[in-house]
Amino acid sequence: MAFVEFKDVKKIYHMGSVEVCAVDNMSFTIEEGELCVIVGPSGAGKTTVLNMLGGMDSASSGLITLGDKDISNMSSGELTEYRRTEIGFVFQFYNLVQNLTALENVELASQICPNPLSAHKVLEEVGLKKRMDNFPAQLSGGEQQRVAIARALAKNPKLLLCDEPTGALDFKTGKAVLSLLQDASRKKGQTVAIVTHNTEFTKIADRVIHVREGKASKITTNKRPKDAKTLMW
Image 1 (cartoon, rainbow, N blue to C red):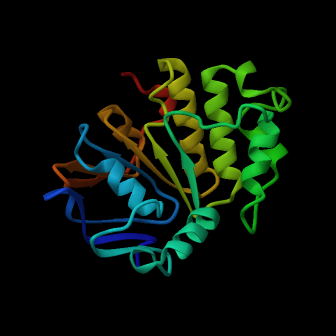
Image 2 (image 1 turned 90 degrees about the vertical axis):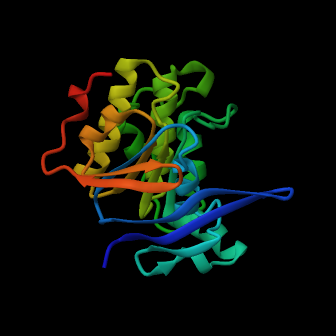
């Protein structure tokens, strides 16, 4: 059984009398420890997929599972607990608490989950050993995104979801952030899903889900994923 399963999932939004089908009977799987890239143009439905995987939105129909948990049939309260304990989120914009230090931002997230990792250790692992006491305004964009990744990893989540994690970064810093996410999968066995419009990112993935018009138009696997440090875009 796959670690993550999306089976015949549909998501319909109601806008007045108009129905918009953002995800249309989509099916795919992700194995534990894989780095999966969900790629497609704007409006294809990929962020809706991420939101449903993360329990931030519910499917209109179909089955979504993570391990032995059926996410698609959870109540609002159960989804809140699921987001808190099972999922790590990394977004395009860092969403750090501005009046807390880097260390305090990471500790804040680790306080809400049952088996957190050491905030100090995770910040060291993302290269911020000497920046723990700095506030977000004192950090570069790349450093702030590293704090955001450390915050997500410190939760020790079963699934790390990343929505355009390099979108606000320059090329060099973006590659460094992708390398961190690749290391989380390769070295720590973390299951990572990255949503992006950038097809170059597919080269570092174990599994690639191409999304178009709400459907998984193609699913491929890479036997030899490229090192993130070698990417060019």
